[in-house]
Every structure is written in C-alpha cells, then in structure tokens.
Image 1 (cartoon, rainbow, N blue to C red):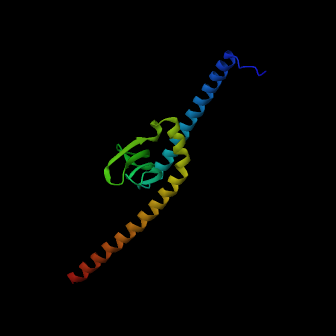
Image 2: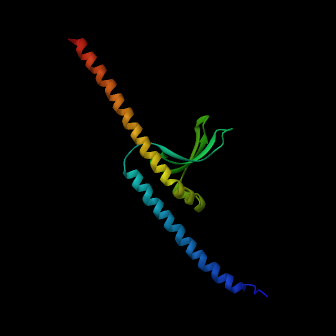
Image 3: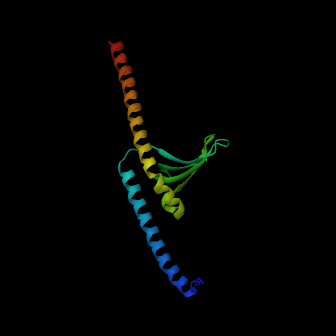
Length: 145
C-alpha cells in the first residue's frame, strides 16, 4: 500500500518551493534588466521584433520588441495589427508576468539577431541617402559656376 503524503510534508515542500520560485523569478528579472540595459547601451537607435505569434486572418500579432515606447528605449511585449499601425500596445517586459518574462528570455536571441540586422540595414539606408545628398550638392555646385 502506497503511503499518502502527509499534509505537513506538503506544507514544508510548498514553503521551500515558494522561496526557490521567488528567488529564481527575481534572478530572471535582474538578468532581463541587465540584458535590456546592454541593448540600450549599444545605442543603435533602431527597432526590431521577434514574432511570438501571429493570426494570418486578422493580422493580429504579438512580439518581443526592442524599441522606444513611453519615451524610453527598452524591451517590450508588443501586440497589434498589421492593418492598423496605431493599434499597437506596448508592455514593458520587466512589468510582465513571470510566464511572459520566461517567454522573453526564450525570444531574446532571435530579437538580438533581428536588432543587429535592422542596424545593418539602417547603415545601408543612411549611406545611400548620403550619396544622394552628395550628388545633388555636387550638381548644384556645378550649376552655380
């Protein structure tokens, strides 16, 4: 016959696991704070997102996003619609539930890759823009003569 766990044993286990869970959750939050500060500290000034899920029929999506919202750069959960760019809602990752912060941790490598790619694309765009401006300035200077 299998012995049923004593309620007192479960109570002690519950207290122990609650402490471990709270410590682990706090450590995850601290790690996310450091990651966010490191990404902001890179000073790239570009947006990027790692898609979490998307409904093809409605255009609704959820993503882990690095961008500027509420006047600050950081990590956000973004939910919005491909059909309405003004519909997006940004929730700071550090204010999200533990489950969502775990999801952010899983998506962070993908977001970092997207952020670097967005910065590389931006460099290309800026360089092309500079070339256009230089060409116009040279043509205008030549026409002045």
